[in-house]
Image (cartoon, rainbow, N blue to C red):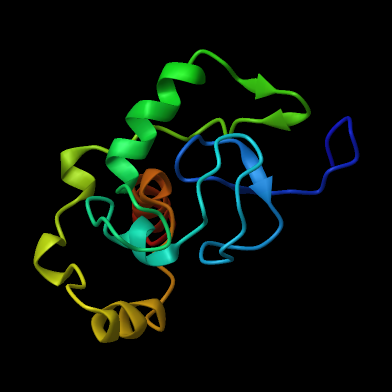
Length: 131
């Protein structure tokens, strides 16, 4: 719980601030940057036309102008310490990007994409725990 009593523990993929009470795909609106929490756009960061008109990559770049990486807190929200902007290596699944409504609907029903900035640390942890 933070100073203002918020129990939000899930970060916004666009700005990195911990604003959501539910995991990716809640379709909540970030009170910091306005991004709608779309798990399909989290999985496919270069996809436009999901819940948000812009793709995650473009939206992040715009958001970072107002909330640079050095800014760790905004109002009563704290930025996830491990959050970072999406990189090209995070966008490797480009062939699977939904191109129509049915594909988008099917992608939304797939397994939780997880946060791209946590994947490396999770893979590292699983390697060390099995050693």
